[in-house]
Image (cartoon, rainbow, N blue to C red; front, side):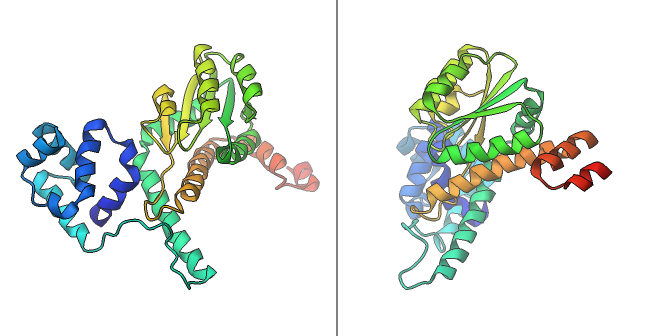
Length: 284
């Protein structure tokens, strides 16, 4: 994580375990003071064991507690508290464009770092193997769900996207153990999505969620959790960064599935996407 350690912890603190959060909150509250702690001092203040501090240090600094303090010290010179907006008064739209692009690239990097490759692979295989895939999402997540639905449909996956609460509840009663539910919620707390997922689980469906909050109620319910992260660079841009990170995760899944298509599957995809004209289809 190098010089991005403090920004990474700020952005992703909700994903940490309770013990890790206690250590991280003390670190972020006063990084300068943190560098003066002995391990016993930190253990007492955070109410954690010294073993937990060692594990935290290994996870986030790649070494022991002295290495963690060194990493924090290296960050202090360049680290700034995240402002509401990265764009300063008087800057133009082109400046905003470049700053937004930089922030989104950091969000993509955080998203890649926070997702377990084995989980991503397993979810892709589950999509391919499912008798039926149902996608649930509301509000802004519904836009991501709609895009994901159309992509999977073009790939020949038996898929439905439902963002109406009452319809999704009825549909959730008709899934079974051969079905996969893909629930999208940045907060992981959207009541309508939680209620629908609960019904689907009662009927035996496997549940995958795409969220920004690993410790959310939705993540706790899901069999597999995928993370869409922000950059942690600003408060105002957080929601948009998470939205585009969600799209990146679903695009990555679809890109992998496209690589698995045989010749007939590729031809079907090209027909459905409108890439091939009538003459091209005839010639093929």
